[in-house]
Length: 342
Image (tube, rainbow, N blue to C red):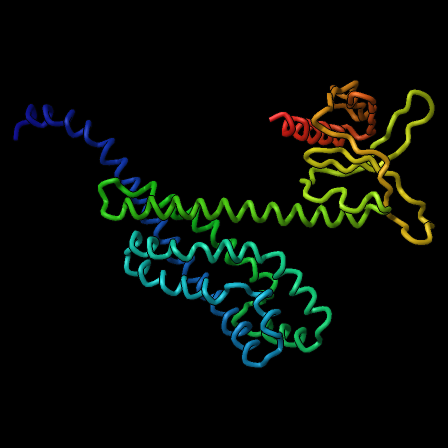
C-alpha cells in the first residue's frame, strides 16, 4: 500500500476514533463498576451472615430475647440475607441484568427495614440497659475475631447503607451499558426501581428524625397548653434569641421553629419544684402570615444583627449577637415562610 493510500485512509480512521474511544471508556467504567458491585456484595453478604448466625440464630435458639423483641431488633434481617445469597451467584457469573432483575422484588424488605430502624435502635438500647444476660451475650459475640472489632450497633444500619451503594453502583452500571447490550433494559429497570426504593427509605428516615426532634421538644415544654402543641409538625430549628421590646431591655427567649409556626417560650426557673429546665409556651406565630426583614446584620461582621417579623397584629424584633447564628435563623425562617406559600 502506497504512502498516498495511507494518507487517504487516515481521516476515516481519525473520524472513527472518538466513537471507539467513548465505547472503550464506557466498557472500562462498566467493568470497574461491575467489579466493585461484586466485591462489595461479597463483603456485605459476609457481614449479613455474621449477624444472622451469631446474633439472630443463637438468640432464637437460646431464647435470650422473646420473639417480639427479637423481631423489633432485627426486622427482616434474615430475608435480606437470603436475597443477597440469591443475587451473588448471578454477579459472580457476570449475569448482571438477570441477577438484579430477580433481586428487585426483594426491595420491599429494605423499605420494611427502614420503617423499623428507629424501633430497632430503641430496642437495642433498652435491652442492653435492662438485661444483664443480653448485655453479656452481645459483648461475647462482638468479641469474636470474625467481627473485627465491629459492634452490633455498627452493623444494624448495614442494609440501609448498602441500599445507597446499590443505587450508586447499579445506576452507574446501567449508564455505562450500551443500549444494544442484551441486559441494558434489565439494568435500566433495576436502576429505576432501586432509586425509587432509596427515595422512599430516605423519606422514612427524615420522618423518623423529625419525630425524634418533636419528642425532644415536647419534653422541654411544660404546662397543659403544651400538650399536643407540636404534634404532626416538621421541626426546623431552635435556639435563644433576644426579643427587643418598644422600650426597656431585650429579653432572652427560646424559639422553636417548625414548618408552619414559630413558638416562643420562656424558661422556667432553675429551682422550679416540679419542672426545672423546661419552658413555658408564651406565643405561637403562624409563618403563613409572616413578613421577614433584616433590620441590620447585612455586612457579615461580628456584631450580630436584628430581624423583623411582622404579623397582622404584632411585630417581633429578634436580635442575636452572633452574626452566623442570625444568618442561619434568617435562612430557616425564609424556608418556613416559602413552604407555607407554595
